[in-house]
Image (cartoon, rainbow, N blue to C red; front, side, top):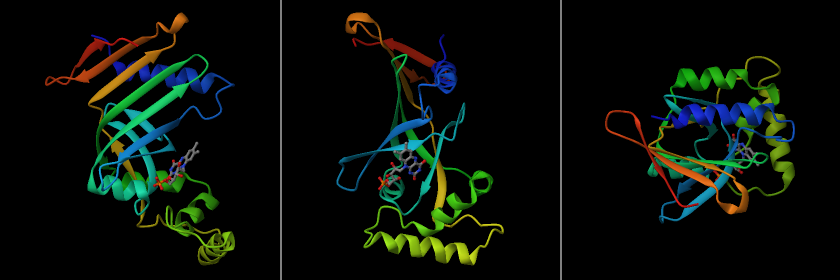
Length: 193
Ligand SMILES: Cc1cc2nc3c(=O)[nH]c(=O)nc-3n(C[C@H](O)[C@H](O)[C@H](O)COP(=O)(O)O)c2cc1C
């Protein structure tokens, strides 16, 4: 039985090796807001294995609030060339504090400062307001250890389905929906493209 996670990881490696793909880990992440309407935005994938697909963000952002109320999302990757799309759907859980701390620690100093300074998704007056917040945060943590903000962490999407799509000539693309079955394996269902 084919393993869609293995194929995903191979396709991601192929994209990372391809110099014409600038952001191989970029993915569109769709959530559902309080009124049941979709919201989509690009994020960077920070890990993928049998446990799921990991991304990091501000927990008080629009997506953070969406995921708190409705912990379910869909990810969509697209790599061109060679023309491959992967859609991954499933429930989303917070990563552990230890995992978030370890990833935050690996970030560059100014990215850590930015995580404190940006009140992500909330209204900003003048751009100088953000610059002032960055400067004030940097003064508080001058080149020393910057702790992870309590409002910043990660989520792991545990895939219930993975759809693999490959571009073929004349729009006769290969499209296979893989759904997790009760024994933990994957059922594969080809779909009309
Ligand atoms: C290529 C790309 C990668 C991004 N990666 C992230 C990310 O990993 N985490 C994040 O919080 N925002 C990231 N952003 C910004 C988000 O797209 C978005 O603007 C922000 O998270 C606020 O989204 P929200 O208001 O829907 O919560 C990225 C944007 C782009 C274009």
